[in-house]
Image 1 (cartoon, rainbow, N blue to C red):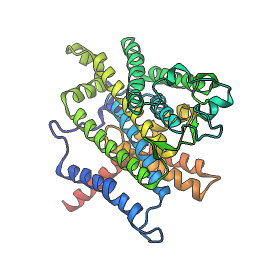
Image 2: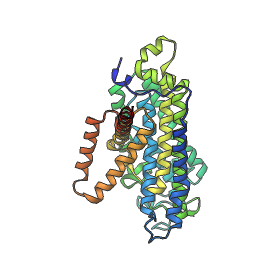
Image 3: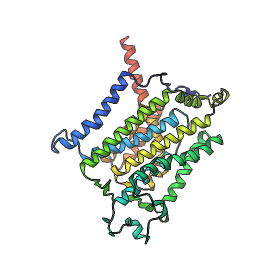
Image 4: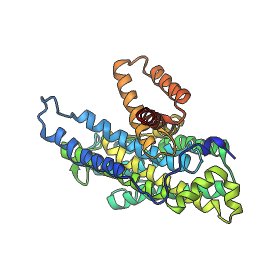
Length: 375
């Protein structure tokens, strides 16, 4: 039995959130739906309290990353399966949204054609078959969920049925992502090759660059993150979630008691992939680009780093980790443009060595010490 995993905390049975937790969720809702729009759209640009478009886009992007980190926590922190392929699911959701946004450009591209510019440049005469539904927003939103979900289900079924686990599972998920990245790099696949999709102009026929559209995307991303957090909280506190944690700690014993781990692992693995796909779809219109780089090995490993830095099996920890790591990354790139990668690497090593339970574990330690001092 893995004693390292046994040290991870187990949520209290039957409790979704404490009063303090619900207060935090309410504060997050007010921040996302009221405070940020107010500071960006109402407060004058010259005011000290004005929140610029850059920071709105940055926070929106990090919230998308936080959804991926939360998805990683469900499959790694609570089920004990380390995936190094979640960047693929994120990118697939992003490409599904990107295809719709490319169709929304219409004839406003550089070549004034109904085809995207990269297809005109490659002398394509018509859309390939897999672009057939790309002019429908509803169809593409269904694909945002279905493509990562079906791929994860098929891959997970064969992998879990073959009892592939541990480092072997991590390696094959990384290999799957790398193979997909090489496929999307090819121009003949119809996904824009190395450059991917960019130069988006409209979404639902509304200019994507206007402030109100940006703010709607920001608020929607925040609400999705909060919704996924509450859903994840419910799952890990349910009987289903407790079986997942039992599989994490002692899968053989779970089998001896009559449970079939395959169904449980496959369900949470597929749900985790779908969450990443939704995050990718929200990410693309806010950042303005999607390319095969999102499927790189580093992109998938970063998701695991956010979960590790924040604290696995805590739900809130990976969200904190995503904000902390990406916030530090943004600050380092501005202040130390030549050395930011070294600082970020040192930060990760320090957290790994001295904070095995992540930032949330450190906060709990301070809280415990303060309680003991008062006693």
